[in-house]
Length: 636
Ligand code: SF4
Ligand code: MSK
Image (cartoon, rainbow, N blue to C red; front, side, top):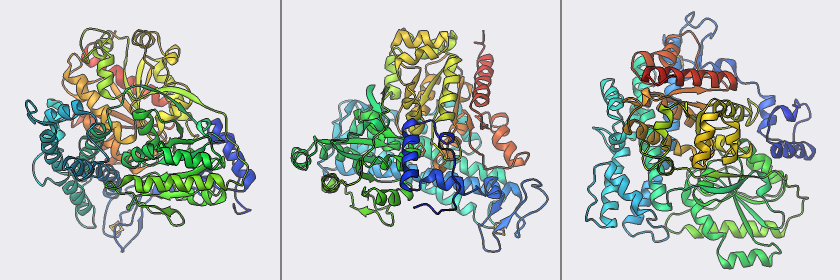
C-alpha cells in the first residue's frame, strides 16, 4: 500500500503504452505502488547524477560541485576528471561482468553438452557451429561435430580466462579497427583479467589519470561486446538455433483469462528453453485442464521475452517498465525470473495479487520471493515445479481479472545471418544488398536503437519518436532489448510500416518485403549489430573500418550499467552513440571532452553523444551519417 502523503503523478505523462497506463490506473485504485510512484517521489540526487561524488574510500565520501568542477578536489586530492572516470569505469565493469558472466554460463552449458554430461540440450545449429569455429581459425573440414565443438569450447574459454594475448573474436574485427585498438592498447586479453585490473585501478590511490583509466575501461567494454556478449549470442544460436524472422504477438493482450498464464523474465535462455518444454508437457497441460483452464499460456517480458520471441515466436507481454504493471492484471499465475533487470518491487506487487514471483538462479534471490533452483543438468525439475505452482495459483484465483486488450503482431528474429541472406547472399552482392543501397543513397545509413525503458522519461515515447524520425529520413533501424518491444507495440516491426519510411528506404523494404525496423533480439544480442557492422566493412565500398561506416547508435531511455558498457563498446568499435535520460558526466571537463570528442578525433573511433529530445537525437545521428557519407564520397 502506498503511504498517504505520496505525490501523485499524471499517469498519461509517464507512458505511451496504453496497456501499462490502464494497469497503472488499476494499481492506483488497488493502492499498489510501482516504480513509477517511487520515481515520482524520489528526486534523483543531483550530485550523483553528474557523477561528482566519490565513495571509493572512507576518508570520504567526497562531493564536488558540478557547477564549479575544478573548484574543489576530494580529500585524497582526486580531481573531478579522476572521480568521473573511476565512476564510469565501474559502471562499465559491472555491465561487462553481467554480460560476460551470462556468456560464461552459456559456455559452461555448452561444455557439459559437448562432453555428454547433459542430454536435455543438444547442438541444434551445426552450420552455425562450423561458421563460428571457422571464424576463430578452427579447421572444420573432415571433422565430426563433436570434435569441432570441443575445439571451439577450448578456444572460447580464452575469452574469459586468458592472461596474455587477444580474445578469440578479435579475429572478426575489421583489420583497420583492430590496428587502432592495438596502437592504443585497447585489445582485451581475457574478461576476468580486464575486470580485475579495472577494479584495482579504480581503488583509492592507483590510477589517477582519466585518460589512462579510459584506456582500461575501453578494454573492459570491448571484452563485453566482442567477448562475453558475442560468446553468449553465438553459443545460444548453436544450442537453440539461429533466429529467423517470425511473426509474434506483443503487449499485455497476449495474456488469456481462461489459461494458466506464465511469464518468464530475465536474460539467460537455458531456463526459458526448458520452460517451453514444460508448458507443452502433456501431463502438465492435462493438470492445467483439470484445474479448469483451457491450457497453459507462456509469455516473455524484457530480454527473456525478446530472446524467446526471436527464436521461438513466444508472445511478449511488455518491456522493463511494464513488469510490475502486468501483475496488476491479476491474470499472471507465476512470474519466473533468472538474472538482470528484475525489480525487487515485483515481490510486493506479486503479494498484492497473489502472484508468485519465482527466482531460479543462484546469483539472483529476492527477499520474499519463492526460490526454485534451476540446474542445467536437470532443467525440467525446476520448470515443471514452476508450472505446477502456476496451476495451483490459477485454481485459487480469487481477485478480479482485467487484461488490457492491446495486442500487436510484428516480425522479429533478424539475426545478422538472416539480414545477410535477405539482402542478397552477402552484404554486397547482386540483389538489393545493403551496401549497394547505402552507396546509391536509397538507404542513407543504419542506426541501432536499443536499450531499456526508464521511469525518468515517458515510457516508449523517446524510442518511438526517435525511430520514426530516423526511418522517415531513410535510415534503416536495427533494434534489440526493451527498445525493440517499444517499437513492436507501436506497430513498427511490420513490412507495412514501410509507409512511414522515406521513399528510398520504403522502396528497399517493399522490394525485399522487410520492415524498416529490424528486431535482433535481447540486449546481449547487440553483438549481432557489431558483427553486421564488421560484415558491412568486409563486403567493401564503405571504407576500411567500422568508424568509416554511415552508422550511429542510440539508447534513448537507458537505465542499466550494462547499457553504459554497451554504449562504450560501440564507441570504441567506431560508432557514434547517443544516450538520452541523463549522462553521468559534468560538461566542460577534460573527461567529457575525451568521451564526446577525443575518441573520434584522437583515436579515430566513435564518440559519445547525449540529448534528451528524440528529434534532436535523430538530427545528431543523421548529421553524423551524412558526415560519413561525405567522407566516403557517396553524398549526393
Ligand atoms: Fe574522497 Fe579520494 Fe576517498 Fe574518493 S578516494 S572518497 S575522492 S578521499
Ligand atoms: S532487459 S538492460 S532493461 S534493455 Fe535486457 Fe531491457 Fe535494458 Fe534490461
